[in-house]
Length: 365
Image 1 (cartoon, one colour):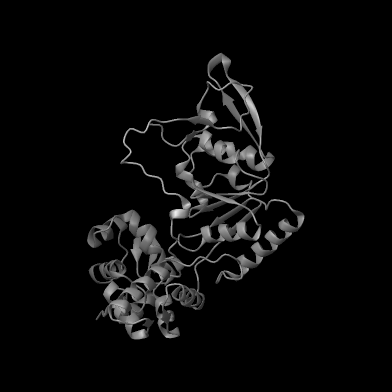
Image 2: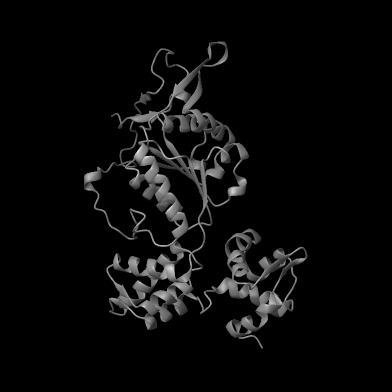
């Protein structure tokens, strides 16, 4: 029995005739050896279950007012000209809404959006396959674009600047170079490490914007709106308490909200009060300052064992039972933003101004 058709990129097959249109894909029938391992579900058979709210327009998007205003102007101007939006690079910490903004831009431009991830594109043929199937003004969104292999990234240069790509068909003396024209499109790249993007790629983005952490009042609005889509209600005070514990990140706020809902529902409640929220945060090990158990263990290790520091990151990692890379990328940035930790050439230390604050939240003598 033959399975449904699998699509293979033209760039990976040298046997295709030179005169054949290079935008087509080779249709390769694959034998279905074990039908029990693979099953296909039609879109009509899928019942959508919304577990999280994602805004569709800039008006629905909460927070990031300055960035939202800029993107609104850019998208409206491009739509009036009936042109694709300039290539857009959005960078910032994870969980702040970069992918959501890409979807909103596509909606505002009335364009289709194709989503992929940088590490997924291992060969240049993978990217050519995506680009050659874009319609005019379509949007290609590449998440974690800084992790894209260099040989794939180089294909983007000509595609972004001139809307053309060069591909090689065949091998050896019979190899031929084909210049493939593309429909004008918009590339939206998202990254958490903008410094790892090469200068040639970065310079080809006409719009480069940073998305920053959210203040508590904006997170509070996001939490209240998200609660409505979770079929529950929440007090303003409870929403603010969740916001204070969310490290300025909507993704974390929504995760905490779902755990608060779990506690409320198992207690027979449909309304989330401040009391239930406090109970949930205690259950999760998150204190009034928004610190988790590892945050507190890290600060205690420096404050008590090393009298405030400085102390090396490897020593701290051994004491709290986490690897140093996780501490540097996940926990330390928030503590530094709160003013509870400093990085120095000699190691980590607690600032003098934070000692009194730490005594109150860590019960230090």
